[in-house]
Structure formats: C-alpha cells, structure tokens
Image 1: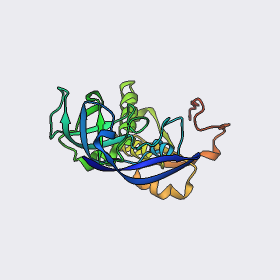
Image 2: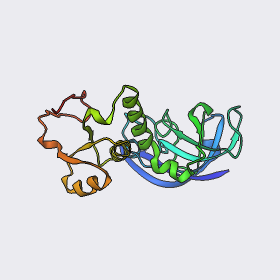
Image 3: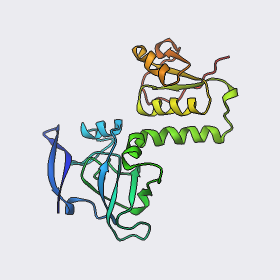
Length: 220
C-alpha cells in the first residue's frame, strides 16, 4: 500500500525535503500501524529536516516527533483497530519515521489512548509543546509551589512550551513574569496573561549556549 510522506534526503552533504510516495513496507517492523491525521511542528523536527546528525543519524528520513491518528492494524494487546491514539516522544521522528507521513508504525508501548475530551486535532494543537509544559507545571505543583509563593518566571516564552506554560500558570492563579528577547511581543504576552515582561538581555547572565547548565536566581 502506498502512502505519502515528507522525506528528508542527503545528497553530497546537502539536505533536501520533498513529498514522496512510499510503501507501507518501508516503515519499521513494529507492531502497530497508525493512519496519521495530525502532527505538530517542533524545533527538533526542524533540526531533523535540516540534517542535524545529533537528532537523526540516517537519511532518507521522515521527521515528526508526534502524531495523532487512528490505529489500522496491531498485533499488540493494548489497542484495537479504530482506536484514536496519540504518539509523542521516544524515538519517533528522530531515527524512526515520524508523523510527517500519512502512516507511522510504532511499538504499542509508545502509544496512549486519546482522551475523550480532546479531538485528534486539539491533541496536536497542544502537541509535544503542551505535554512538556504540562509535565513541568505538574512537577512544580507536586513540589508544593503555590501562587502565594511569588512570581513564576517563564523564559523562552514566545515558543510553544513557553506560551502554553504561561497560559497554564495564569489559569491556576499565578503571577507570571515573561522573559524574552522579543520585546515587540510584549502586548501579545500580556494578552496571554503575563503580569510583566522582562528583556532577557537585561539579566546579568553570561549565556554562551542555549544548552548551558541552568541558572537559578531569585527576586525579592
């Protein structure tokens, strides 16, 4: 059976993206075949699609680190054909063909049942960014963080994780200070719930790389 997918190919150290026709047999030999309805766009997808070998080692490849869709076939025992499901994380979209194709084939352990109160499209509107923001917030709440403890600082706040984190914290009654290098987005961030917006360049941090160790700072 044929399907279409975004394929990133390497040609003489140049990476090219194109929509190509593939066969289901090109997919990995995993236990569950899913018809993809939606996928979200993440930074890691951009890295994979531009040939970053730290994300994807072998090409040709289909990026897409998450997907929502309907199970067509499975030899596992956790799901059945017709189930609406979500896949995010693990190796999908990195070295396993990802959600930017009409089909994925993944192990059942990577799959979760779609919540009844979300549509497939809504689940990918939140996507991996929403899952990441929600897990971070839940961890902080589990450690006892409360609105009366003071302002919450959200950095990288114009990105997917940052925007959803800002909205979640505001929904729970926290005062949120947004840290950004995009001060032209101040009105947008305040409309989302930021109490104030700080220019990241005003912070006394010797930032060499975005993947440095974290800094911890307090404001009285």
